[in-house]
Length: 213
Image (cartoon, rainbow, N blue to C red; front, top):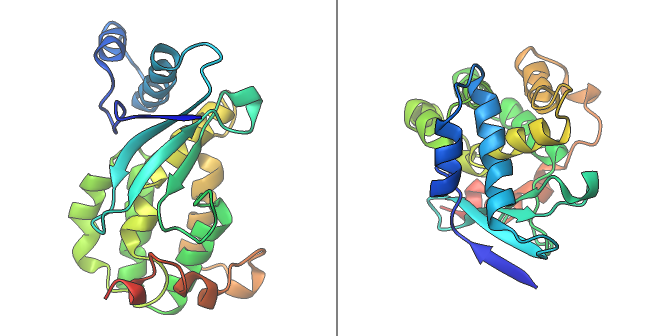
């Protein structure tokens, strides 16, 4: 059974967690973000408490972004990021390859300025900014006609990065995901990309740009 909870948002935690975070001087804001998520799970989910769903964001289309906890790896210490309408599966779970594929197709079918703006938005989220902030800053430049709507890629990213930070606690964490975007930004040929999701398949999803017009 899945219990639904609405207590988690980007830089918005339950009151006891806020108090614990405020009691510490954080040298690394990104570490504060991942600890905020971990402490929210620790203070909200009972021991052996089953599956919990945390709604964390919503697209302008009304589709929710939520976290499914526990995840399937690290003995349940992590979580899965899910986006309603992402695909036609039951899990609606964006994979890193699917996000990377969408970025690649947008590079091939849009202006250089639009693609660079999307990449810069991802880089800023990687550095710790929230999706609202980067969409406000770069959204006017998102002149895309292919793939999913840009916010479907950007709104899950903060949570995908935090999940990677939790899973690889003393490793490269979020750098694993942003590296794929960096390689596209630097011009890696599409022919060299492994596991590229076909554009036609992406364009059939509920969140495809052509399906939102």
